[in-house]
Amino acid sequence: MFETPLAVVGTIVTDPTRRMVGQQEVMKFRLASNSRRRRVDGAWEPGNSLYITVNCWGRLVTGVGAALGRGSPVIVVGTVYTSEYEDRDGVRRSSLEMRASAVGPDVSRAIVRVEKIGHSTTGAARTEAAEPTGSAAVGAADVGDPAGSADAPGGPDGARLSLSA
Image (cartoon, rainbow, N blue to C red):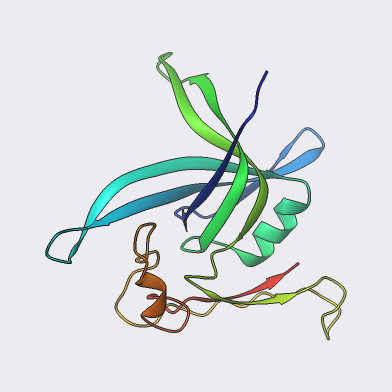
């Protein structure tokens, strides 16, 4: 069977959750990718949205858990598939999911400092995230807003992330 590779630029909209599946850990979160279009008068209007559940396995669990959370602007690469299930009422449903192979901050919307594991001065990986500044909401510079990353340090929301690699 063929795998469908996909790269999605968006914002984490749920708190990542970690759980055990057999002997392996999985980290899950919902990702929103919102497009905007510039109107003739120069104003931006909302376009289409994509919401997808992202599953992270292996070393991604540690990295995502330590460095990213709700509101983080990210770029996720992985394979996409449809998950089918029955809800509580027995109705058959499906959802779009992605098995991530790489997850990282979108540096057009956040200022990031990377610390490799083992190179930290304390010997432990550190993560620091500043609260967004200004009145813009996290994720205000969505796909299709070429000027959105230049509004303020760290993008329009001023988000600053420190990551461990």
